[in-house]
Length: 193
Image (cartoon, rainbow, N blue to C red):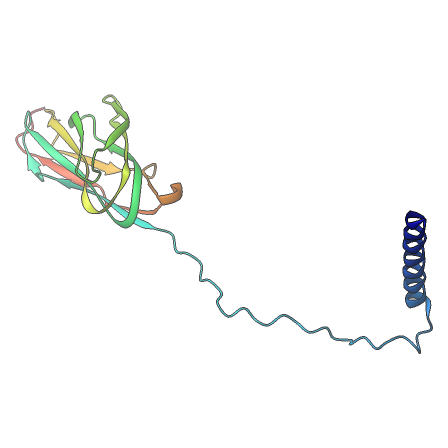
């Protein structure tokens, strides 16, 4: 008997609720409750976060000499300068293969316990792609890599430059806005043809 009363009670509530909704939708406009014509707007957000600026970095080639002679060796530091926390770098360098032979590429001191991911030296075209990084981020201004070149005969100068393919990855793998140093020129004295 209690179950039957409960079922009948639920039926009455549903029926009245449906009827009440029907009545509110279909009553004459003159009896409807007034609804404001302008809905209030949400208050303005006071603490709008400013857009995050992208991290920046500068790659600079620093030669040990600006003038040398055939057969001599010299080094070029690829220095990285940034306030961002850097985890990985792709260093892309183009050099004059008629004037220089790239002998070695060694990690610099920018990363503690640097890991070399890739080192591709193409002597015939004068291209270098060097990728390195570390689990502990590097920051500040320090050498990322140290390149050792040997001077060939037959030229009176040679150029070395960073390319647009260089990339610096910061926290969350976000690339930094990168500034590259201009081309460096090494004068070669007593170059014999």
